[in-house]
Amino acid sequence: MMSYQLGYVDDRFEPAHSKAGKRFRPLLCLIATEAVGGKAERALRTAASIELLHNFSLIHDDIEDHDPSRRHRATVWKVWGESQAINTGDGMLALAGRLILDSSPDASVTLDISRHFQQMCLTLTEGQYLDMSFEGRDNVRSAEYMDMIERKTGALIAFSLWSGAYLGGAGEETRDALRVFGLELGKAFQIQDDIMGMWGSKEMTGKEAATDLYNRKKTLPLLAALERAGPEEIESLQKFFRCASDDAGAVFSILDATAARSLCEARRTAHLKSAMEALGRTAIDGGAREELEALAHELTGQ
Image 1 (tube, rainbow, N blue to C red):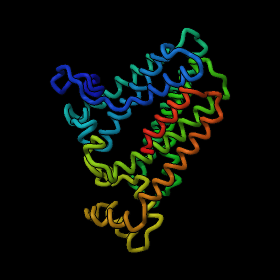
Image 2: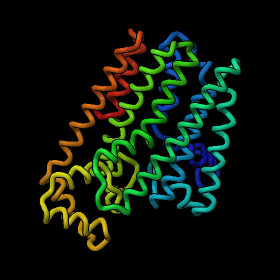
Image 3: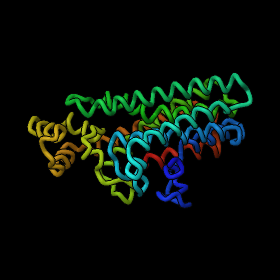
């Protein structure tokens, strides 16, 4: 089932070549290692651990959100049930934790990276808690949402860059700047994901169109609309969130009327700009910096 999640086998456990996601988090770890003068091979175990952790979070997230598909095929829980999917996710978390203990031949470096890894795991689960808690609240503000995605999305991307730079031999100043670059990139990436999750097609995202909307998840487009809407529009949105209405068309009309998409796009661009400013505070230049910049633009649809 882990192999299925990673795209190596199909639901009959026969070899497959399914899409396995962008895998940009481990890639950022490896790029960061090389960007500061190290060899990517030094960071392979940490990069693999990052990808395993990410997939653990996806398996559990799909269960919690009742998402039937990911990467253009059925999710683990949809094929084998929630109990087996939970167990599969737990197994991937255990593997990630075991692998991170082989980060470096230097025991002190490994211990430091492991401590940061476990703290990042805790931060990620705090973000998931906030995300789910928003579903039962009528008064979620966009500032709270940004705090949530910094934990749920930004923390892992920040760790990927920070740990890669650490394993490449970078000093504290460069490691910290790359960590901030990752946090800001994570916010911009999640906002772009929210935009695509609302307006993107299944062919583009690999998930059913507007799944978050039908799951009554308060993503940034909906929060932006709530903050700009008039009393009648707010009541209409609140009725939808409380499942007193299933009129998704009315919700999209309000999103259009409040220019929610434009606001989200502006915020995405602002966080990408902050990410680039943080990258500029490092000593990284040349091809490595261009590679990080290009990947950041690609991930955020810029």
